[in-house]
Image (cartoon, rainbow, N blue to C red):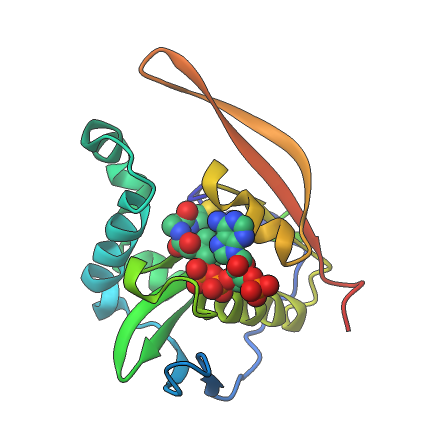
Length: 187
Ligand SMILES: CC(C)(COP(=O)(O)OP(=O)(O)OC[C@H]1O[C@@H](n2cnc3c(N)ncnc32)[C@H](O)[C@@H]1OP(=O)(O)O)[C@@H](O)C(=O)NCCC(=O)NCCS
């Protein structure tokens, strides 16, 4: 999910349309409000912590987590250069996403929710926000290379699986679902 962005090859618009701060109900159970705000480079350490904690939720061995150190480490430069938004509940960051552009599509590079905030609509809200950002940039599709455990989430939200990326982990193949969300077809 964290390939280097290649903005020079992107055919998406390069302007950054303004977006109002969103105030979204997080769930009727908590009746708390969630805000999705543009991340700042100084948030990098917090977003890195969220990414590691969220990835560990799937129960992967620590040596696997260590091997993904660079994928899970959010550099201030990534936040400065890519569309990166954080979901806050009661003022505390609980999840974030980041987009990159390339080849006429935008790619979801990160989408992480803290375990204690999962299954309350945070992931959906972040995904919908990401889709709207990609739409505002004139893109028609959003590509996602997913953790296998998260593919059902994206499919549930309307993405369709189009390919599989095969990586190698400890000498064994690891298959990552590649999904596409058709922005143009959604209102
Ligand atoms: C995948 C993830 C982002 C989902 O976030 P979330 O806040 O729990 O999701 P939501 O509560 O908004 O769920 C939205 C819908 O998707 C469903 N859903 C959530 N996770 C799902 C999953 N893993 N598989 C299938 N459906 C899922 C929910 O039931 C909900 O359905 P509903 O609205 O019809 O009731 C979150 O589990 C996560 O961060 N996981 C660990 C990190 C990760 O793998 N991130 C993705 C990297 S590609």
